[in-house]
Image (cartoon, rainbow, N blue to C red; front, top):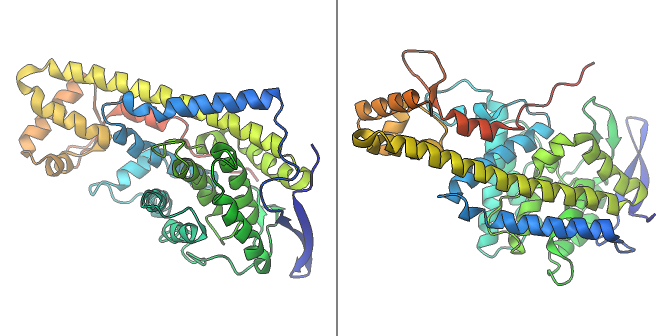
Length: 390
């Protein structure tokens, strides 16, 4: 359905003309047209979210899964923006024994986790998802590393341009003097009750609108992706923020940006919603499969460790620690567990003999051990995007 979703206004910078896009307020007018295919996909996405919300029943400690899953999402979201850090880099950076990681990349990912945690904590306290909360999260997101030289925690006061990976300008969001005229109705839309607009559809529309407004100098893509689980948690569709679409967006990066742009140029909200719902369905289903795989892995390894009998107790505690931190050193594990160094070192040796853990440095001192099968599952899809060829 052809509709107008905003207006393009002329401007110029350094004698170069451009056309900035001013989005119309949400919801779309005329309303979205749900054909049979789109309705089926919406039902499938809802069912997948329901299964995802029951993920706690699959794992002995669902918080462990969430802890690692949030870090994976943070990494993937930053990779979409060009970060080249790996999941292993992030885990290593959290160890005192492993300095020298690419600090800007790692800080960017760590900031993402901290910003999302802050947003969720505020929502659980009853604070609404609002422009104020988005500014608070932005201040955390860009607290250190790349972007800290930009205007942090406040809306931009300059015109920005959105470029593709080759550095070519492909989209110009509203001028700074038009921002609040866009952001005020956006905030009102965020506050619409579920009976007025279904939360999953609200998340789909709000993500595009936020990206089109692009209210900050930097960090808009990451914050816009955080909006999705925040909205679903605020509207009680998820108990935990365990739906993260960055892997789907990364895997379909060109279509992702194309769908955003077609909303602006052609009013194709239906095409975007179809893409979004497909991502929700597939991502939620994959998260459930991942939880099942982890449950099976943890059970199998626990049974093998219990077979050690007399010396199983300490090894089981090390195994439990590795489920929280899949890369670990003996000194760090000793501090975490409050056990003796020889007992912990011996347990790592037994886990290596069982094939559950491997030493990854090849050194005699300052060795690091990885829960490799667990790490392999977590790493899936987190390879950095290749650089653009010139």
